[in-house]
Image (cartoon, rainbow over all chains, first blue to last red; front, top):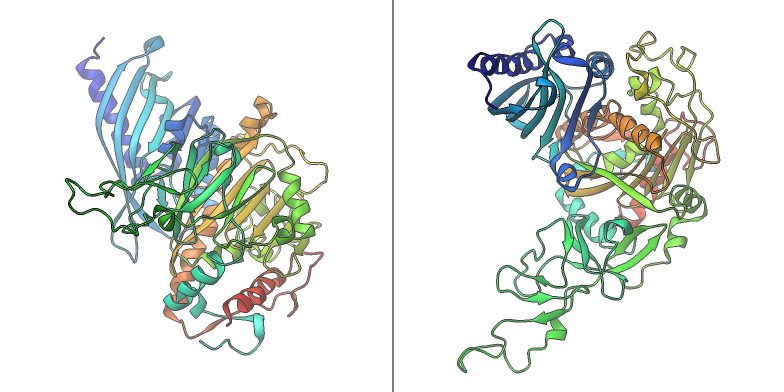
Length: 159
Length: 403
């Protein structure tokens, strides 16, 4: 089953907003792109390929996403940094209950103030996208599977 | 390099930056007569299973032989030094060098050399070439509670003696004979000297100040009943502590950014349950020269330190539980893992601060750090307001390194 042109643009918009709130803020808006009951996992690719459950970020509700945001802003000591998400190759197919199963490639470039830009993470998203009460698309599930399994030091912001 | 006055209350920054010192560390500490952590038995359960890891900056292969015994050997071809095994894990009877296809068995013994007798009566190895002279250097192997240790020396000490009585007891507390289950891995490349990681784990001072998240939720606080324990040599160490409440106290008044009003929107993130017979909720164990065994609430993890050069190391995390964990405990361990590794709500503080430490010491490499908290001794303590475990580490370090 193919999706409509309108829905395809809606999906593009969702991923653009996702990148924008993480890169330019406000970070507090990031959880709003998810359903209240949601799953957000950042998984090293070797774990994913071996079926090992460990994720380096695991949020099982919008509340846990907010807790992560709060910690980034209030408790984690980290150097200031800029991030840029590049999200490409978005492909979708119909899933159960009118949801969309979406895959996309991503890379995140990180700029620390005294370093040249570097690729912080590269991998793919495996997502389940549905419609919220207001009618707009949001993430019911988001799995970030990163190929760059040796992480350059620290991942502070969500991917 | 001359060690500054003050013995181990001063640590010269050169030990974090000097490439010659790094080389000496690789030879004396990592290729010396200690036991380095290399993996878990459950990672290579079947005959032919193998894993590749590093001891210091040297790649090694750990295998399960046809006899069921564990073997280890240097991961570099006897011929031209090429890395033989490129996969991190797998199952194979033979290890074949990709360059000229010399092949080795699970013990690293040379079994095949192409064209050993020449081609059409031309070339080949000299008559006195002996395969037995070109085996890969074998590692000594010892295991305890399902954990595999390896050593480059043949006559490494007995592992139980090496750990020492107190550290052995805490090691056995986690590795108590129950079958282990690997929950997953996480790896970081931290731009700092490898010893900064050990110092960090031996340093309860920072934990009650830097880790606002831990302190905010009472997971680690300077006023909690705690112990610092070492072995007789000072090379291994233990920080043992207990969870407290989320509230301000005299131990938190120095923490300018304590977030007393931070409450979790989803408290399932921190839902620890008691699972060991004693009341310790935090046990951080450092095993010289490359292992950290951690219990933080219900997060169990091994952190393996793999130095790359004076200014960087890889930190490999193996998160695990037990085969008899129920589903709720598995979920709890996976949720609490949010606090740890490269994106950890707590340990991100550490990798960030280690980078800043390396930045500083690399610029002012003629200077020395100060380790005076709690006095000048290297003894066990009944509190957290001390750097004695770091001093003890450097007392042993100086002896091994001849510095």
